[in-house]
Image (tube, rainbow, N blue to C red; front, top):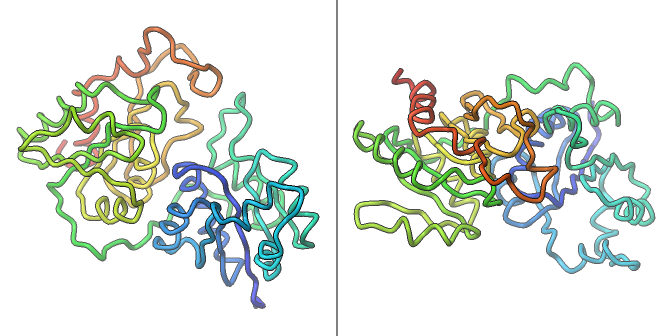
Amino acid sequence: MKANKRLLIIHQGALGDIILTFPAILRLQKYYDAIDILCQSGIGKLTKALGIVETCYPLEAAHVSSLFTDRADSKIKNLLRPYMNIILFSFSDQLNQTIQHITSVPICCISPKAPENVRLHLTEFVMENLVNCRLIKRADAVVDDILQPNCASQPKNQDRIMLHPGAGSRRKRWPMKNFLEVEAMLNSDGLKPEFIVGPAEEDLVAGLQLPYRTVHALSDLLDLMRLLSSAGGYIGNDSGPSHLAAFLGLPAIVIFGPADPKRWAPVGRNVEIVRPKMACHPCFETGEANCEDPKCLTNTTPQQVIHAFYRKYGVF
């Protein structure tokens, strides 16, 4: 019998990093009455809307920023007080020490990613750390059979296929001409492709704007969630929206290049990764720039992507 057990998760990461912790948080729900999160405000609101957490606190708040100084605000001390456990995703030993100094709540400190030389998926890495911190039992540290959230508030249009040609890093972007070719193939098959661009991808908007084309320029993650929840399928690069599409259960094709899908692939029952088989090791985390000829991206053809999509979508 649980006795008002509350857990706080503190995570400084981006959208995709946090979504890859969702399977672990869903497991943790078995052990706690309430789970809350302190993270970027937009991601926190999304996480709450998906039913992953109960309450979200904005990382941008002034009293939270005081954690990164030598004098923590009394408000942050009060915020931490009700919790039975804290999970801190951070590279900063100093942040861990600061939180330990202002609270007696036990802290499970987890690196936001596995060491670069370990080909271990982030979700598995998080599960293993939760077992080591004795926050979940090993029997619950299973990545497969992920429960998808119920986002059926908006009716789906199965013909509506979302294309996301952007990514947080330009190094991860499949050439735009390939996305346009995929768009043409979807159109010729009677489907309705639409493009999604985020606030960091404004450079793509001008090249996409044509009278017959729908382009969604989104800055709010709740709008992105509603848009994806209404769609019938998704094709995109290794990016935060791709992680969200996969988690929502969309038939999703995610194009990987210099990053390692064994470490970073989106988690979901209906997602497929497309990346050419190559002898070279993924270099995104170890090199400052791609090689001069990034065949890990350019060797993937629109035909390969469209065939992979139709396998998931149910045509072939």
